[in-house]
Length: 281
Image (tube, one colour):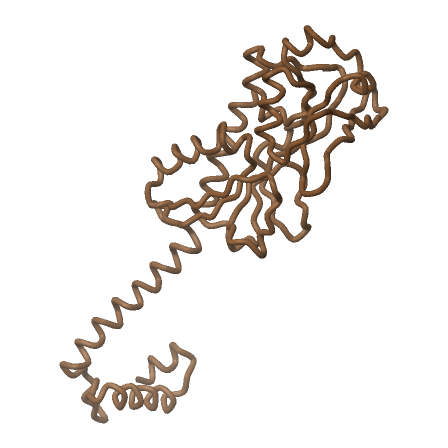
């Protein structure tokens, strides 16, 4: 008993009193004690076995949360943009769940910037810098930029804009975030920035709708390259003014607290980042 007390940095009297309280709660003696000997009673042996199992369960849980397990298990509440969400992220999540079948997903598809601190969302895939400095932003594709593009059909009818300033003569398809229409498009050439205020007959709060309008020849779009990279390669969309540098649109995985970066989130981040790089290049 004295050795146990020293190990716990307690006095022998405090340790002995703790054992007596436990015996009183259980209504059974745990030890048979004398001045020379100390041994467990039968009840003490049974209770010790349960205590050892309980401590092992606690230790297993601690190691699972801190270091992760071979089998990743979690429930992830995920928010993602509509365009890349429908076209790529949903199928990538299918693959991820096949690799980690004990991960459950609850997905919200929306271009609205959900408030992670108020909504039931653990992580969010988003373009651009974090809207809140408190957010943790893990880069998935930091080099992503916007691309000015239109379909061959539209360009055959309306002509090719020679510079961003020429966009004033074109029907521009705008994206709306909340109540704000993204109709000021930024470019630079040789280090000289310009901003062009564009106009058009279509505005949507859904990035997928803007891309579909562009594909159907309705006008010029200013999209994340990650959203339209396959359309550009296939010739369904044509990049315009390629000599001009466009706006940065880094792609992130965001969460509200580093403690939410569980093994499942870390694995998902690595998986999606690899997919983004492969798609982009």
